[in-house]
Length: 383
Ligand code: ATP
Ligand code: MG
Ligand code: MG
Image (tube, rainbow, N blue to C red; front, side):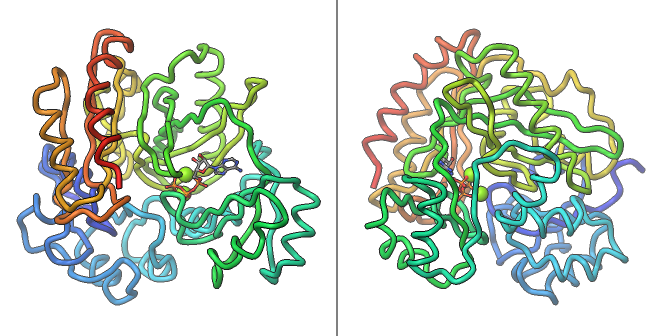
């Protein structure tokens, strides 16, 4: 039967949980590899889950035995374990794609061969002040010093404003493999969710993302005050970048829109992505639905990826107290058209993504008006 193949998911956080929601609606069994009672497992009762970590080879092997197609909600997985099991089970996207993408420097070196525009960057090999000072002379200041690996929510980035900041920057990111990026003077950050199927590269419309302290705060879908031409160009760039990788599924592509209206790639994620959460309410098929369909070779009508109503997504981030995220969700209970998603991660830590809210409306202006009180609440509970 079309829905009888079992999906194995590396990681049971909020992204895994939303993938399971999509699987559940199609009676597809999703086996999750993560800690006991992780958010994805809480909504999926069967005995196919695996307890352990997506960084442990043995646990990945065990998951491979229990499923037909394996996928990941996170790129920081053991790709050597994936490589080993790829002969027994289908891995989507490919372990090669995940391995290249999980190292942001390698990702950029790979994409360079495909002519994808990016901020100029240099690898550090010695991680010394002299080396970074030399790079600073080449790239100019400010520059962004970045960890090549294990980066998320800006943890792994350090803005270097001048030569004087170098010791502090190297201290902050010490013992990590590093590269430096020329500063991108963007007027807006854009993102596109791309769905790679067995024979097509599809994309959702271009959205606008707003980062605060390097963490995604808001997503406006479609991007506001962006011409159709730029919307199309951003989608084309995102599809071209994703086409450079093997395998099926959702990829999140982050971009900078520069002052002269040119586009630059910021980075790619080899998975469903925070910038695509609005698709749950905003589109006929969510990014999670599309990801599952793509990896199982089920049909994805391109029309189902269009935005049905302007949507705004607001992240609920852990604040100063363990329950502040619940206050934000409580305020959303009274907002018209607000869909609330709490991730059931337990007690909040400052900066941790605890949930999100999506407001849809007939016009973007109306959605902005409806969500403003929630943005005020979220701003007040920040750590
Ligand atoms: P994510 O959670 O999206 O995986 P990350 O930790 O991998 O984040 P990046 O996406 O590289 O980090 O950067 C986070 C944010 O920092 C960007 O969205 C952007 O706002 C800012 N940023 C990154 N690189 C640059 C740059 N070269 N110039 C200016 N700002 C930048
Ligand atoms: Mg990243
Ligand atoms: Mg990013």
